[in-house]
Image 1 (cartoon, helix red, strand yellow):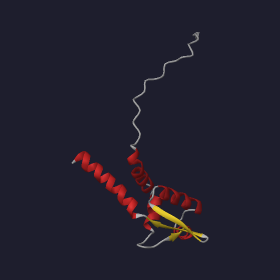
Image 2 (cartoon, rainbow, N blue to C red):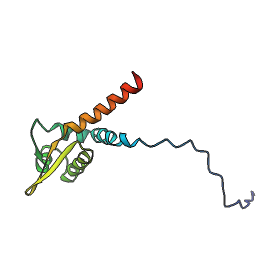
Image 3 (tube, one colour):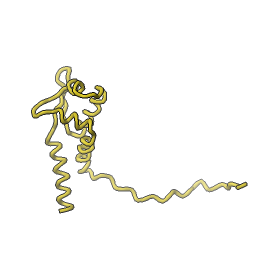
Image 4 (cartoon, rainbow, N blue to C red):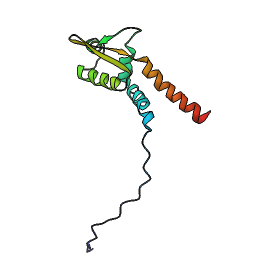
Length: 118
């Protein structure tokens, strides 16, 4: 029979690798845009828009197999990333893409690549 002896309450923690640094503050918006666009459902929603066209949440729900709750969730992610702009018009909320925000994120990645690797 093996006896167990009491060990001190202070045990040594397993060795850890140094923590990776977080994303630079200037990069956070760019990361949000690409994270938002990384989901296939959000890509489908974004591709529904045509030049100069705004869509209501109801129109988006009607055009997708997603539930209203899922559509609202995806629109919230896109809105928080700045990919779309949504405004209330009477009883409806209409959305439109913000191409400038997406271009800014693409430009940030392009600049990063040019500065670091060219």
